[in-house]
Amino acid sequence: MRHSYHIILIAFIVSPTINAFLFDKEGLILVPSVAFRDHSTPEKSPADWNLHNQGWYYEENPIQAFLMEKSLELIVQKDLDRNRVKMFTAEGKEKKDLCIDGLSRSMCAKTDDEGRLKNTFKMTNQEIELFRQTGGGNGKVVFQASVRNKNVKGTGEIFLCDDHGVTFISDIDDTIKITEVTSSTQTLINTFSGDFKAVEGVSEIYRH
Image (cartoon, rainbow, N blue to C red):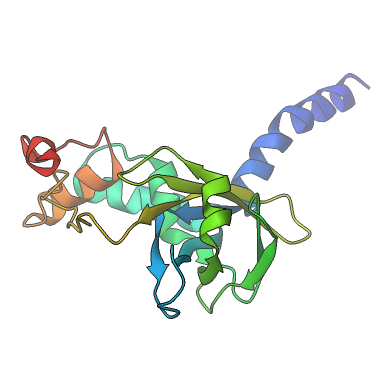
């Protein structure tokens, strides 16, 4: 009887660990996006807005992430962050309904063959003013998105780019953050371990 209790206790302790390792987890990433004025109706002033939202609905593969992590660690001779590695082994969930809430109306769109959400929708200038928050140069709109019939959700931001102003588009690797792309080993280390390091002086230049 004592052995039976020990087996039950071990199973109770180990089971959550096995579940966390073996069973796939789903997630939703919403990428900061932009909105521009809609000038298709010139006589309308102020013009309405075209809003773009982008995201990725994915399913983790813990076993693939573990194998990739250990393989890369043999190359770089350094412990890596599995939370970063697992995003490179995850797979997109195709043709799934993602619904946007928190604005003047709800709407749904399907992910593409790689689980990506790329959606454009319109809002009147009056609607935008109701939901405009501070952030960026001209404010932003915050929304929520969720997977239909699943407890998978996220919060996204759409930055308002008005007709007057400057929109700045920049590279990231070795422009904003240090990646050292000329070295495969250093690229792996800077991508999958430690804190990200900014390229010195760039943030000050971008603020001018």
